[in-house]
Amino acid sequence: AQSVTQPDIHITVSEGASLELRCNYSYGATPYLFWYVQSPGQGLQLLLKYFSGDTLVQGIKGFEAEFKRSQSSFNLRKPSVHWSDAAEYFCAVGLIQGAQKLVFGQGTRLTINP
Amino acid sequence: GAGVSQSPSNKVTEKGKDVELRCDPISGHTALYWYRQRLGQGLEFLIYFQGNSAPDKSGLPSDRFSAERTGESVSTLTIQRTQQEDSAVYLCASSLGRGGIEQFFGPGTRLTVL
Image (cartoon, rainbow over all chains, first blue to last red; front, side, top):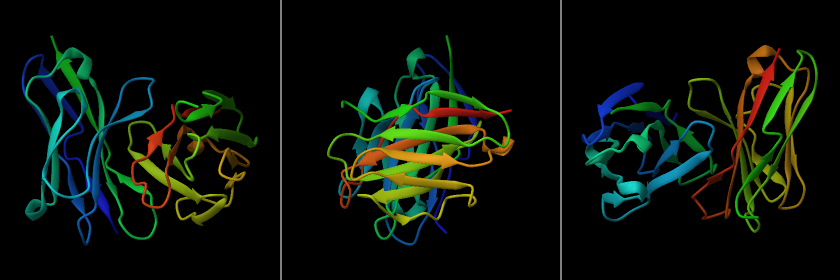
C-alpha cells in the first residue's frame, strides 16, 4: 500500500534560520507529490506540487522542494523562516492511476523561536 | 463561490445521535473528496465522488458512515449513531475531476461527540 512518512513530528527553528522538512513515500511508480500547510483554525493551503519535469519546484511563500527518485523523497526547504511560517506541514502523494485520493503523512509541526 | 465551503464549522453532539456535514465545492469542480483528521494526525481519505457517483468509498470506516452528492454540487456526509471516536475535523476538497489532480480544501467541520 502507498504510504507517506514525515519522520519529524515537531521541529523548532529560530526566525531567520533555514528549514528542511523531510518527506519519504512508498509507491511503485512516480506519484504526484504535494506539500500543504495548515495554520491554526485554517484549512489546508497548497504550497507546491510536483508532477513531472524539473525536480526542484518552487512554491508560494518562498518555499521549494526537491524530488529525489533514488531516495523516494520530496523534502521541503526554505532559506530563511519567518514567524508567520509557524504551522503544521503535510506531505501528500497523489496516485496517478485508479482512485484520485491523496495519501497524507502525519504532519510536521513547525515552531519558530523569535 | 470563491472556494470550498463547509457547514457547520463546529458541531457538538451526544453519543448515539446522527449528524450531517455539508460541503459546497468550487463551482465547476466535478470531483469531490471527504477526509477525516483526528487530533494530531494526518488526513485519512474517506470517499471520492466523480459527479454524483462514488467510485471509491474505501476509506469509510464503518456502515455508520455514508455520503451522497447531488449532481456535481453539494455533498453531505452522514454519521449515524455517533461514537466518541468519531470526534475529528472532517475536511472536504474538490478538484476539476479526471486529470485535475490539485485538490482545494475547505476549512473543515470540527465534530465533537460527547
